[in-house]
Amino acid sequence: MRISARPTGRSLVAALAVGGGLLGWVAVLPRVFRRHRELLLGFNPFKRFLKAYNNLASKISGTEHSSWGLLTHVGRHSGRVYQTSLGAYPYGDGFLLPLAYGTHTDWYQNLMAAGSGTLTWRGGTYWLERPELVSAPEVMRAWPVMSRILLRLAGIHNFVWLHKSRNQGTDCPPVTSPAQCGTG
Image: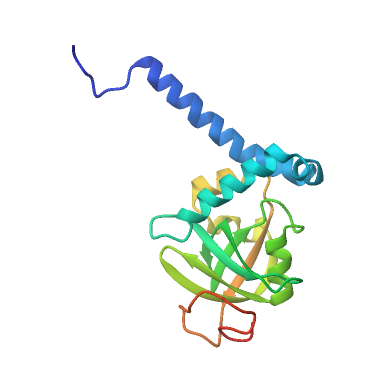
C-alpha cells in the first residue's frame, strides 16, 4: 500500500469546498445578524452556537499568533467585567475594532459608556480610551488586503478607533473594575 503526501483531486475539492463554505459563512453571518438580531437571539440553537463559538474564540484571542484581540470592558449597567473576542488592527495611536454586528452590540455600548477598556493583542495588553466611531473609507486601507476583502464581503462599514491611554504606558493589567488603569 502506498501512502501519498500529495492531496488527491477529491480531497483537494473537498478542502476547497469546506474553505469556501467557511469563507461564505464568515461573510454572510454579520449581514444576516445585523438585519435579524432579535429573531436570531430568540432562537436557542443559534444562541448555543454563538456561545460555543465565543468560548472557542476567546481561548485564542490575544495570543501571540492570533490577529484577534480580546477586549475587556465593564458593563454599563451591571458593572461586571466582560471579555469579547474581536478582530483588531493597529491604527494611528491605537487600534481599530470592526463593528461587525452594528452599534447595538453590548461591547460597543459598554465601551462608549465607560470611555475605556483594555485590549490584549498579539501577546501584549494595551489600555485604550476615547473610543471613536469611524467609517470604512477613512480607515479601510489600514487593514491588510485579505482582511479588507473579508470586511467588505461581510458588509462592515463602521469601526471603533480606540486610542492608547495618555495616563499609562503601553501595557497594563487587565481591567477588574471601572476605576482601574487610569480614568476608567
